[in-house]
Image 1 (spheres, rainbow, N blue to C red):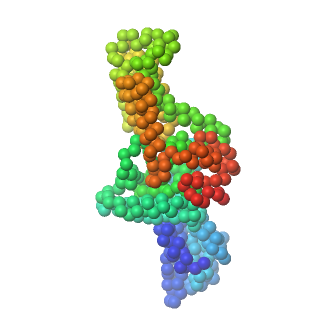
Image 2: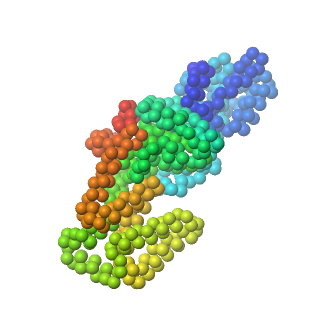
Image 3: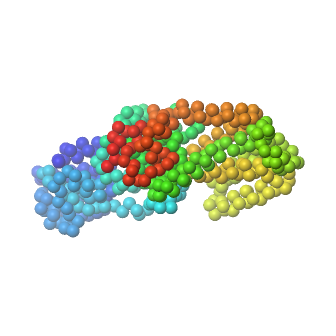
Length: 464
């Protein structure tokens, strides 16, 4: 345990500050994480006494600092524990003491707006880069947490941090992402999406990375062996790689009873299927394959469509467009009037369209159910992907019936099966078959039985 070890440790922790102060022939080292410590406390209680009183020994420092906040350090583990707890380390002649200078990271932290939870912490990342780093450090207090920092953007000079756990992560993945970041040629980096676009050369409809505003979810996924990328001035962190099974996982799953989570995940799977396929299935059955429907149901559908001047495909596309416009307007207009506009759009316009004989009631129900089920997913990229695949199912089913529907289904399955997320299969055989992964797939087992990490991501599958 010496200063040289700490200087080597700093290579992967750019927010670690090591300041050397010289009094005559004595070197006094001040070591702290700037993301966890309060700079005013360090200046007033540590730096000022050292400068003013010509301190040369640790005993001199002990006499000048409040004794209640002082701790002697006798081993390496205690030193790192103190650093990660917001203490400043003072060293003279390779002897160490620590002084509490903890920053209150809760001040100025806002609640998550897109990824709300019933249980669990309410804090979220903000545009403050230093605070965001501190929110991760206060959750993972391990010297295996590495932070590589890059400056990207010839004009913006934006800081980009790469987080990973050195003893867990797949090193090939780290090398691949580091290479992409080092060779990235951008003039301006406004937010995390600029980094995603520069790293992802393939035009995939489905998202291949997780975007989150929650530090707790980031920490959970880092512990699984994934990589986090934080961009200065952006309240969202990029998590890679992403698997198809992640689309039905939410942060709430980590805080709920495992049985309730399993039921909720099954509901999300059903909602995903309904949202993507039900409009196309309705068009296929009512336009080309009426013989597959019960006679009473077919007659009911026909009665509802009496007087509608448009064919089913045009009717479906009109309603699809109207609902997407309503969703988009709900996002853009001020929050105060957002809810009322949604109610007006859904009830008044829908009822008026039926009364005018422009749209059949069953079509409104089909498109409404398809749209509402997509609201179960808070990942905007996933919702956009559902929208695209829904449109593909509608068009193919309208022109080829059930044949078109199953062609669309085959295209979807082939596409997601052939996708990869930074070298990892998007849909993994391990994710379906291996019992240790299956425990946190659709069915979530009890937390204490999750004793293995994802073997697809890391060789170090044993949990603590």
